[in-house]
Length: 35
Image (cartoon, rainbow, N blue to C red; front, side, top):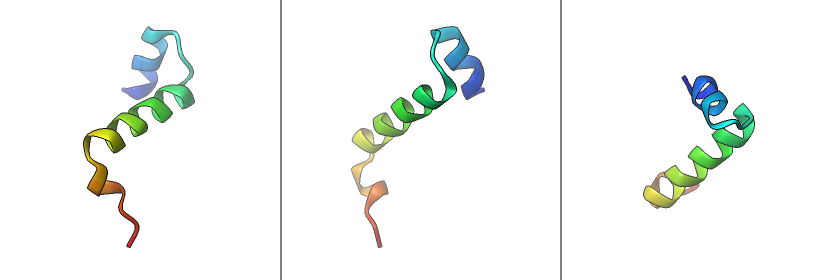
């Protein structure tokens, strides 16, 4: 699914994954707390 969305946006899969991971971290900051 992510590869398809990246293709639609004209981006590489890696760039798309980096952006979505960064967005998730901004929306859910406690999810990235190291234990």
